[in-house]
Structure formats: structure tokens, C-alpha cells
Amino acid sequence: MKTLTFALISLGGAALFSGIVYLLSPGVIPSAALPLCLGGVLLASFSTIASYALVSRGLKSRIQSFVQFIMGGMMIKMFLGIISILIIAYKFKDYVTEYVLTYFLCYFIFLAFEVVTLMVNLRAEKSEGKAEK
Image (tube, rainbow, N blue to C red; front, top):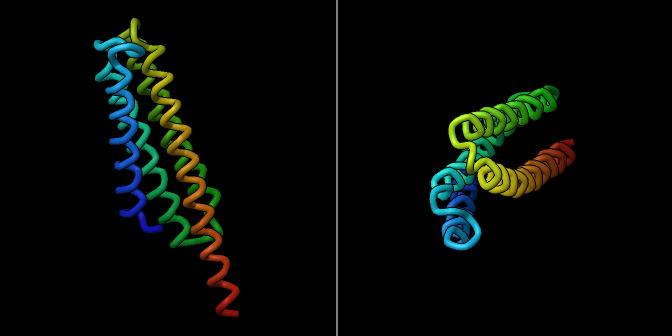
């Protein structure tokens, strides 16, 4: 799957999850925490897109250094998540729980989507390699 297609599908998923968070806001999520939770959804989406772009680029350039690109992608996502949680914990102490739950729920959903997409791409690369031999 190309990076642009992956990005568009991820942004569509982010819009869907943002809608779900917005619908949950009157009862489950306090209204003051709503912008933070929506920001968490968008951050999870954008970090996944950045990670996928890096790993996809590594897959195309050199398959031998694919593991290094995967580790780099995971580090990008991890550092963005940790930094955002630290900022929220420092600035908005009352809404940390809502933010962390929203962020990590979306993080794991986008992570699963990224892994499935990368596995499909790796299988395609492997089958193309066999066809050439």
C-alpha cells in the first residue's frame, strides 16, 4: 500500500475515532478534556503516518536495513507519545487519565493497522522476488 493511501486511510480512521470521542464527551469524557482527547487521536494518527512513511521508505531503499527503519519508526511514535503525555501531565493534571486512555486506545488500533499493512507489503515484496528468480 502506498504511503499516501495509508495516510488517507489513517486520517479517515482518525476522523472516525474523533467522532466517537465527541459522541462520548457528554457522559464519559468531561467537556473540558474533549480538545485534549481529540488531540490525542490526531497525534496517534500522525505519529503512525510518520512511522509508516519511514518504514516504507526503508523497505523500498534497502531491505537489509529494514529492522533499523522499523526501530526508528517505533522510536518516533514512542517519543511523541511520551512527550505528549508529559506535557499533558504537567499542564492539565485533571485530564491526564482521559488523555492517556484515548491516546493509547487509538495508538494500538493504528499500530495494528500499520503492522498489517507492512506485513502485506512484505509479502508482496517476497512474492515479487520469487517471481523474478
